[in-house]
Length: 419
Image 1 (tube, rainbow, N blue to C red):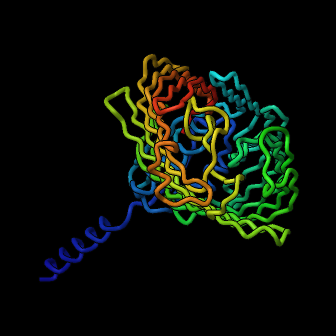
Image 2 (cartoon, helix red, strand yellow):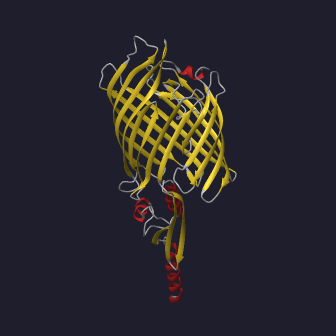
């Protein structure tokens, strides 16, 4: 009888031992050169003495693949007796990244933006750099973004810029050209609620200045306008995208809301919001279908200085540089990207796209979205040349051709995918 109970006791002890969680006793990083090992461990959920959890490992790997410095990442679990070692393997990008965007139409419009950014400053995924833009007038800016300040939750962003462009203002009497200047300083706090959800909030102090250049005039529209403003900004992002080299799959939603207050009592407070929905899916081994839907509304003042614009760089390829404005927007961009050449260091893709959108007129109503005069549809073709080892080194050229009335056509060049 004593032997029987001893046997039961031994069986219970073995069962309890087998039921214990497997614990990670060693956590190592391999393959990283510039990206610091201490930083990778700082932002990872896994740490020594963590339970061995495959879901946690998958989350860490996707988080790493979203970093500009990481081209690809994967993990290994190595067992030695009762010990477990987890190894994260990193393939790095070159993160010093020149930027170039060029916009043209068949009306001989020409504008460009050049910039230089380091997306892995100090080996800690800090983005720092600046740009210069020539769009009739000179513009420039400096940007700093530290998404992981103390851990994988908190970050900060600081932006300063001076944008100066020639903007068309659409009056009942005709179109006027204004010189528009915006000088701003912005500070944002960044917080990751969890792996898929994050928020940003902050304040932007800026000065807006309009100066009449040429064209139509109106007694109710000033020819000079100079005002200081405060902008309160909030962003909520849901990100469930997964990356495999040049391919993307999954869904992402980004909601932006801004409230603007001026120091001039004649100007009412102003609110604007928009949401970008993005959906990507793999098509076979070499295809990628990419989609973006933008929906937005703003305070519906009957003003020629409406916030949403129709522009080559923002939404409709081939349409021209700021050809119209509105207080509401619905735009869809859909394109199929197909890999034509895939080598160790570079990729060549072809793409076919359709950009389409409509706007609400300033002071108008929702019926404006169905107005033929506001609807623009631009199909087109393009090429993408991507250097695999340099972050965001996708050089693109697209040609959009308008099929709606009074349309233009034109090329759009740039660095990085259009969306």
